[in-house]
Image (tube, rainbow, N blue to C red; front, side, top):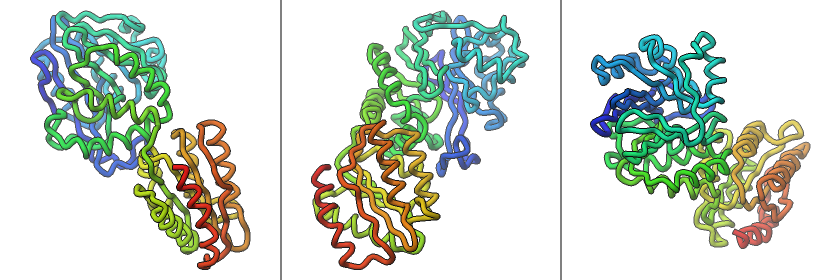
Length: 398
């Protein structure tokens, strides 16, 4: 899959509709794209590659655009295998090519490609420039967006930012490759899920990277996943600023674990009371049939989170534990939390949710306005009514 961005700049990518889990963890119901970029100037340079085996025609597409010319530089912005997977094949095909990357990436290259001749590597640092002719690439270090060696490249003559994983998205490129060829609403939703699943943990580093990029006049953004932003690059900058700040709109994500419907009954009552108290954005999820990937995306949108779990072997339900683990790892901050639980012969669900909320409060500025309530057995109408004042107080804080 190729497209011409400029006369001297080409998109070369592929769609992966076979992989079901990104990083063997995050669902890909709509697949994913892998993008690389080839510059044909006085010198030639390929920026990143794609995942090994994802496209058997990739090498031929690169060769076709080079049209008999050699590859002078292979620029590695990010060493994760979905972008570095074809490095070995590329260097074998083009033995005169020099690898251009930073010191941290060189250490990873030595792990993945121990046979690689160190004389073929050119180390670059913050602000260094690679001169290709008309195109000059200036390098911007962006560690932990989202690996420690991550960096971006900026074409100073054409004002193009090669942003690697930043501004990327889940989802294949179904015909449209550029932002003016696609439905932005669809990609915004999958971009937010990508952000919350992959990059959200490093939001402070994202904010620093955005501050660096804000000083550059940017006409086009070329990420390694998803569309090329040639018409409205400011749109994705605004999205990233909002997501990195982790300031959600007024609303609640309510996630619960229930074995026999009793905790679910409490969840539905809480959702109804929230609505009666003026909360209009309410998203309810059963953690046993909704992957944390999709719940995290919604958590990032809103300022309120309600978690409830039945007891399970004196602790919280395993699927709620999984969600809490992913929340703690990805670190959505500034949430107002409410907790509840259910049990039969032992408690434990609510107790462990409180421990989780305490951790999030200490590390990520969560606010827990009530210790919550744990209801035994099948909740009676009277027991549920006992929650109403607590819910009204909580809703007033949102």
